[in-house]
Every structure is written in C-alpha cells, then in structure tokens.
Amino acid sequence: MGSRPRICCRTLLIVACISLSVGARAAPDRAATAVELVQARYDETATLSGRFVQEVSLGASGRVIRSEGTLKCHKPGRMRWEYEGPDPRILIADGKTLWIHQPEDAQVLRAPLEQAFASSTPVSFLFGVARLGEDFRAKILPPGRNGSLRLKLEPKAPDAQGSSGVLVLEVDPTTYDLRAAVVRDPLGNQTRVALVDIRRNLTLDESLFIFERPPGTDVQQAPSGR
Image (cartoon, rainbow, N blue to C red):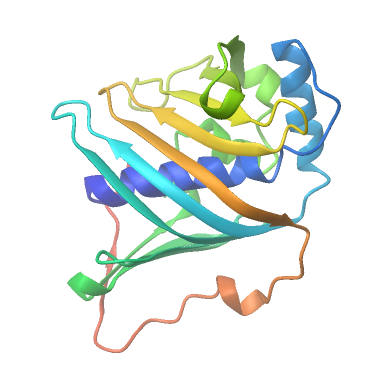
C-alpha cells in the first residue's frame, strides 16, 4: 500500500477505535483513570457518525496537507470514511477487509484488516484483544487547542517493524468527548484528525459498510506489511 493510503488508513482506524470509546464522564484527574474510562466507554458506544478534518504534517519537508470529509463507524470493525474535494477517496472496512477506492487512479486497494494494520495495538483494541491500560503507557500533557485535555498514549512494545509511534488524544475537559487524535510516527510525520458534529448510537444502514466495485476500476491486493 502506498505511503498516502497507509498514513491515512492507519490513523483513521485508530481514531475510529478511540472515538467509539471516549464519552461524557466525570472528569478524571489522573492518566490511569482516564484510560479506564476510555476502555469502559468502548462497551457503551455501538455507532458513531459525523465529519472529520485531517491535517498531515510531513516531518522531512514541513509540508501540511489538509483534507476533510464524513465518517461513519459501526463496532466492531466496520467503518466508512469519505474524503471530499479535489482528491476524493473512500475507505470502507467491512469487519474483515479494508477497501480503498481512489477514483482519480481508477484503482481499488484491498487488504485483510489484520494484515493492513497487523502491528497496530489500537486495532487489537478494536477487536477486543488489547487493553489500553495494559498495552499503553499513559501521561497527561499540557492543555491543547481550546483548552483540550491531552492524553498521551505510547505503546509499551514496538510494532512488527520495530517502530513505536505515539497517540495523543484531545478531549473536552468537561464532557470527555473526543475532539481530536494526533498520531506521530517514528519518521517525524504527524497526522491530526479532528472530529466535528459527532453523533453516537444512531442506526446506520448496513449497506454503508459493503464495498461495491465501481465499473472500470482495477482491484489490487495491498502489499503485505502495510
């Protein structure tokens, strides 16, 4: 899978995992307590829908790429992210397979979810395997944008490639609703995804998470390890 899809997909899946986890609770004042609330909330939120604004900062060049669109998530493992504007893309996860449609290239990439995100602890969390308190070291950071409470989550073990990225959650300090998630990789790249107009536990049509190949597109298997 190319660098652009990999950055976007991995980050969006992480955000979706956490988005289905963070909710309105009494404000905790310790990182460990916050992590416990995130994990507990996971069992209470079945669906999530709204909009996202994504900013990718490339470490080597300093370039910032901004995009936005709509999102829909249905636990477990079903998601639909639609990028709008001059570079439209659709990402669909049906619980088993990740599909990435890039109309501009008349191409579709597909990969088993466990292959596409084989080394990502947040994916294991999504499937009910990982526990945030057990797999991450948590730390409260100084306040972020608009006074957001920032919670830093660092994997205790590196991924299959020997790297270890960092996830920072930005949450409302009063309600603990997730405002944004920031992923920093070992190469210095940073992706920030802000969530807007989020609604939880709405009924979502199952067809949203079924990928139908557009006529004239070329379907390719994503390289392993991506």
